[in-house]
Structures are given as structure tokens and as C-alpha cells.
Length: 292
Length: 261
Image (cartoon, rainbow over all chains, first blue to last red; front, side, top):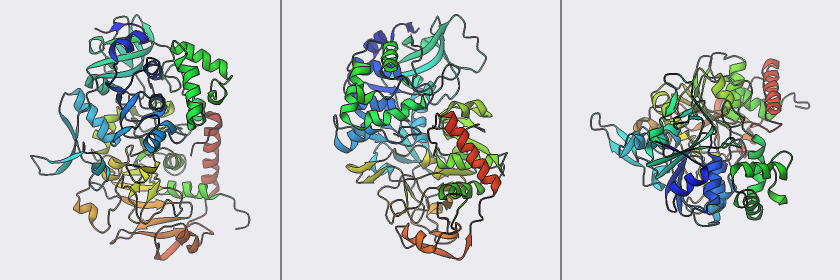
């Protein structure tokens, strides 16, 4: 059974230095509050897995939490580059970053294998691509039945998976809907999972076939309203595109990035305090990086 | 032309949209491909099925999505499935007619680089990476590429082959037993290129109005070939232009004046 607890306690108890951590959410339901809490608690040497590293991992990488990144697309969606990711890869700042890169079909299959506790995933891909030359985790095997050559990649089994969802009930059963990404697979592939939710309700009032993660598959459930901001939670709030745009200038230079992280994350106690500081530092809630 | 009634971005998007047949199942990349695919849906191809890698199948977004997983894709889709399912059952399962992609760099055989400029270990520029493109380029029945043409983007030698086009040409795809036919067209702001039926080298088959062969050659990093008969791209119709501009206007308004592509 999941423990219903605070995000601070969940991260303190379940995320350790050196862990392999997956924070998933495909544009939708990105667990930003949890990412901030990992930065706030100063975790180091993490191997982080995510299909689309996005702004959440740009923050973790720039803040020095990450040793290795396993991913398939690393950009700021709709805006451009992730400057902290690029600075780490191109200039080893704040530390060298080991990368292991895949394609989306591959990485999503690797989570499926992880959830099924199979050693590897198999897919029809990578013939002729340079990716297998630079990622020795991508291998080719022969189908024992047809002889066809297929790609194989090892299963992903994170120490901890963290996701954000819309609702939990008081027992800690979690419901999510809309764009589901790979969250269910990432949770079931992990040794332990933390879910932040918009609200905790008496009854999920759901339907058969809904995407439910039963309480007994989770370690902790934390109520963090708005916890996916600046991404969105279907049925609750929309994506704050202006924040993603603003992140481009906040993160472009090391100084402005560090000032922003210090003012908004390291010196705030909770996600709601972060939201308050962010809204006070700029009427639009963004573009606060250079002025702190 | 002295007073063009459309710009080069517009004719690129419109020329790309025209390649999509009504009813086709189209796996759409974000940015230019998404703009062109939605233009096709709003003009000649109302029954086109748009699939986005985040999971929506049959998306009919009222405004262009800024990201590959915007809420309006899920709200307007026939169904939303998980990301593994999109790649396993729908793309790898052979249900996608056209993969519609952008690229940072391509070569003469329409191989795609979206990974690095320079050396992989010490890149001059680190690009976002593969996304779903390697699997789309392998498995979609056909691939259409849309990107702006320049000598920096159309290069003699790719620094990294992220997703395969026609490899080193000829029957290379067949030899590697790739399921799809690979790129059938590359649409740019200057022209349309199609692979030669035998060598598979990209060949200019259509020039946009007012564009010269010299302009195309200058914007291509290899000695680009022209087909024996090079057609002129028909000028955009007023319906195409008005629909595209209206879509663009509505999208900017919805996204707080942020540009979509």
C-alpha cells in the first residue's frame, strides 16, 4: 500500500544519491514539483531516465544532480534547445554528463520489458542508423523462428519512478487520463514509485479500463496541486507556454540559471512557495531569471 | 516576382500539404510537418488520420499544437493510446501510410541527422536527438521530409545518421530488409526533390515559382541533379493561403503570440 505523505518526506525516504530515477510524462503531467524537490534536497550522481528530458531535466542537470542521462529526445518542446543539457554535453558544465541515447520506440519498449520483468525488449529498428555505433546497449539479434534480424535493448528498471497524475483516492489508488505517455510502464518497471497528484478524493468515480495504478504498486502518494506546472494536467490547467519560452533566456547563461535556481528552488521550502515566489517576481509568473 | 502574394515558408508548407492524400494515415512530427498535415486536413484531405507520437490517433486540433503532446491533440483524437502502443501496434504494426518528418541535416540519399553537428563525443552542436524518427523512417510505408533548404542543412556528408533514408542508394533499403519504402519526397522552401527511381539520389523535380536552378544548387551541399523535366509548383490557391494564414493566426492567438513553426 502506498503511504500518503508529503513530497519532501517521499523524496527523502525513496530517492538516494547514485540511484537510477525515471521521471516520466510526455509533455503532459510532467512531475516538476518532484524534480524541484530532488534539487532542493541536493541529490547527486543520479542516473536519470526520460524519453523527453525537457525543462525538468535541464534543471536537474544544471543543478548538478545528474551523472548520466538515458533519453531519446532532449529539447525544449516548441522552443528549441535545452541549454543546460547542451552545456553539460558540449562543455562538461557543471560536470561531465554521460549520455546513453535511444529512439522513442526503443525506450518505450524498454520500459515495457522492464514492467514485464523481461531482460530486454525487441523491435524492428536501427538498421543503417549510427545510433548503435555509439550506444553499445543497442544490439542486434536473430529471431529464433524466422531468422529476421531485430534490434534488442535492455529493459529499464529504475530504482525509483516518479510521475504526476490527476487524482488519488484515500487508499492511494491513482487515476490518470489524457495523454498517458509511458507512465504506467515506468511505474511498473521500477522498484519503487512516487506519484504526486492534483487532488485526493473519496471516490475516483471512474470506469472500467481507466488507467489506474493500484495503491499496492506505489510507495508514496503526495498531494501537490499544480505539481505538473509549467506542463499541464488535463482537466485541471493548461500548459504555461510562456514559461517554456522564458526558460530559454533563464537557462541560456550559467549565471542567470544559477540565480534562478537559487531564488526559486534552493531557497523555497515547497512547490507552493516556489509558485508564490515565481508569481511575485514577475506579474506573468515568468521571465524572472535575470533579475533576481 | 515583384509583389509576391505569399512567402517561401508558405509555399513550402502548402507544397508539402498537397502530397498528403485524403484518408491517409499520417504519423506527424511537430513543427512544419504538423502545420502542413493540418493544412491538408483543413483543405483537400478532411479524412486524413493524424497520429502524434505522444499517443493521439485521429487528432483534429483546432489550433496548431506547440508541443507533441498538447491537450488539444488528446481532446480531438478518435482515441489516445500509450506511447509504447503507438510505436508497437500502430507504427511497427504497419498501419502508418506516411511518416511526415523534419530534419536538421539531410544528405543526397535523404538520410537524416538530428543528433550532433561535429564529433559525437565532443560535438560542436548537440541537437535534440532521435525522438521517434528512426522507427518512423524504418517502418512508415512512405516518408515525406519537409525542411528549409541551405548548404548547411543539405550536406555532402552527414556527421551522424540518426534515421535512415536510402542509405547509400540503389536497393540498400531492400538489402537491409527495412519494412517501409523510405523517403519519397523532400519539400523545401525552394523546390521539391524526389529520389531517382534507380539510384535513389534526390533529384529536383519541381521548382517553386520564381526560383532558379542556381538558387537551388547554391543551397545544396552536393552537386544537385535536376530531373529531365522540371515542373513548376502551382502557385498557392487563395483557399490554401487563407486557410494556412487563418490557422497560423488562430494558433498564435491561442498560444499567446508564440510562433508555432
